[in-house]
Length: 248
Image (cartoon, rainbow, N blue to C red; front, side, top):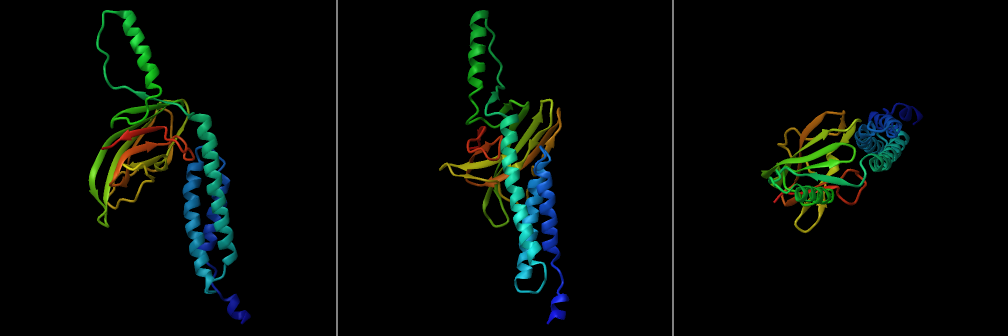
């Protein structure tokens, strides 16, 4: 019996899950880089679960590393969420202003024009909800976020309807800024908010990363077909969207 136990193959998935969890914990404290820790943690959880299932019936050894890997990866994800909230509050701030794309009409009354411009600027600082597609939002850290276009009437592999949006980030700040598909949610007509979905025929899908000062990135995000509004959150832990765009 002891010979059989010694000959049990060790679960590679359990070991990989534990290693990924350790890496995720190490880099989850580093600003900007912790976006990668989130992805590593998710992959680590998957490997740990696979390893745990493989060792459940005694077919493979390594149940301990599988359990440890699952716990470590979950801890890493929790650290990422916590640090994202902390860094987001410190960098982005709660306020955003909407950029107007219309031209002001000429006026001979300089005083009246100045007063109107000041009033419009004050209103724009608060007007970041129900924006039209194509409108940009300026964050306090210099990041400019735009919903460029909407792709309606798409059909997924299972026959369900899909709506896609193309978004662009432009970093006009002096430091690197994060971008992530998890910054976005879709809202239906009843007010239910859902995360993005997998679209089999999706192209140029937005990934997670860091945008250097002066850089820009554009990508697509897909939601369920009944989505009527795109919501942007400057912090993944925020309950209130920084900006919203009307899609329908």
